[in-house]
Image: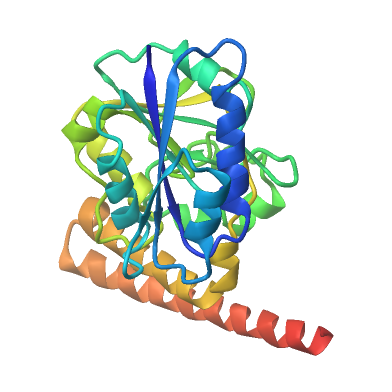
Length: 295
């Protein structure tokens, strides 16, 4: 009997973790699945009762409360350690709900030695497919990435095909990396590639892990037969300035580790990302002022 482990990290997520765990319960009890599903939930010092709510509504889950917020990567690594004995690890954001047939379909998939990870089709709250499968970040990602102006204005542009590879059509396919919102990894491959890099407080740790898997000759596959629904978390909405800074710091770390070929390249990336971060923070400030005035 297959034993799957779900690793989840929470931080002031409201009721989202409870809904995510309820969806897991429905999926593990669905027809066609005879395996076992365990869950380890690591709370990053939310201080708002998140851990207590999870224990109340999902007493079957293993809940760990950290004394301080150590970031997503560190929390995920703690959760994975609690899932020893599981054959397959599912890193799952607390704002993601698996479809009812998720584990039944997952149990039917083969995992040859050269396959490092899979990522599902991720559907947003608006029903649209999220770009959860992408090309490895490089300089042009700023212009052609998921949050670029071109992606927003012309999402079907041929220029985006190398960067943005998610879609319900076309079946399973090999990609560079898949989103950590739902990253599925055999326990043996997790041990081979290693834990998430805790130098990333949040963001880009998924791309980093997939890049390290790629460097070991392991494939990453986008599997649209598996479906999850992503509500875009409350923890990020609650602290937009902090998450904006964390995003850009992590992007620079990724660039320095995997892309840069010289100190000049690192300096140029630092300047570009710093400027982008400042603009994003200004936008956050303006939105905050407008929201306060509207109230």
